Image (tube, rainbow, N blue to C red):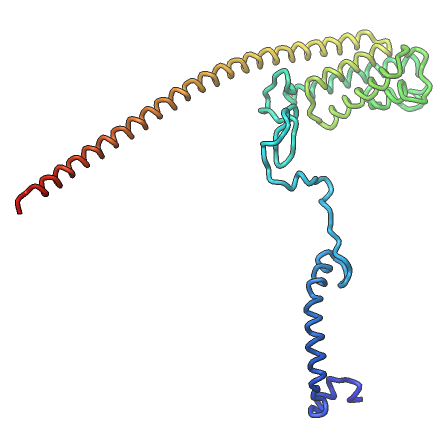
Length: 305
């Protein structure tokens, strides 16, 4: 059993297990070949492959393009774009100072105002739908236990009244399918933004209010439609007021920046003149000192030994 293991045999009979010269040469050759194979094995292991398999070059990660791997440079970008974190971002999507707007910027109402407005419109629409249901769907509402306007979510009403493949009550005003889908979609967004506190731009709110007016008119509730339309008008007037105010601010800022540019140019001219005067004075002083030294040298040369 000793000779079943080369290690045990070498320990027990060291003289018998001395390697021959030919064996030493073969062993050295084998070691050299192993060393040559190690870089290939290391490449395979770096990619998670077994030793001896070709190295697979992995592509860029998802969402990253080769352009993203280049250094960030602002030159070479087409007009209308800017470079932000190695990305080419259209200038129309650049972020502007918070709370500031112009004709090209999004107008944001105070979030508290937005939330109160959306909640109020949602309540008016739910009351509108509830009043319609009491007249035209009394049996269904009793069966569902819907006895208050707050009993039903607004989206349930839109599914019942305007949803596809659902019989609509005959009192619903006919509405084109394209407008129907827009009204349903904007009404759902309005309810979602009110419940989940989603920030919206004023333009988005105006669009939702327009859809809410259409829904109320479709259900024949002119009172609620008039209230929502008045809210929409006030939001639009507020937007115009903000836009006008911001245009004034932008003109004022442009004038201020122009004045700063003129002052900076004047300061640059003063700096240049001061530097030139300093250089001229320095040259004069050097000439004066040089002349003095030359006079001393001349006096030393002409003096008798």
